[in-house]
Length: 93
Image (cartoon, rainbow, N blue to C red; front, side, top):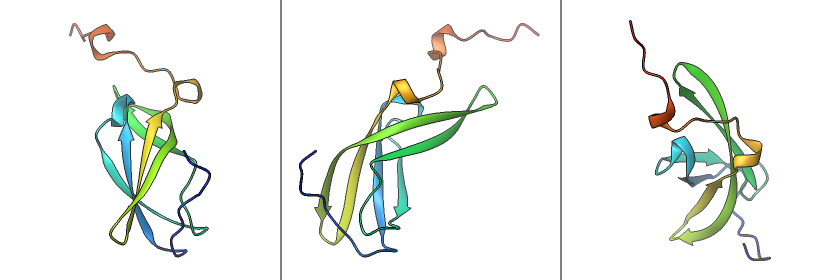
């Protein structure tokens, strides 16, 4: 990301785009608590019935009209390990 960090009013919403991992392609809205966006966010997802912590790092931010949009990329090193769906065991009941 560039050195010039985009700012918004404290308490304003910004849009999050998830790139990679189990949340890939999903969007969310967050509220700015300090007049800008978070460098890292943690997403909690259920995988095979287990809550899993997935870390994402901000990679780019831009203003679209009056709305701040931030893309976050999967941070594998700070996330709980997740097996690929094809590697998960099927229940044999």
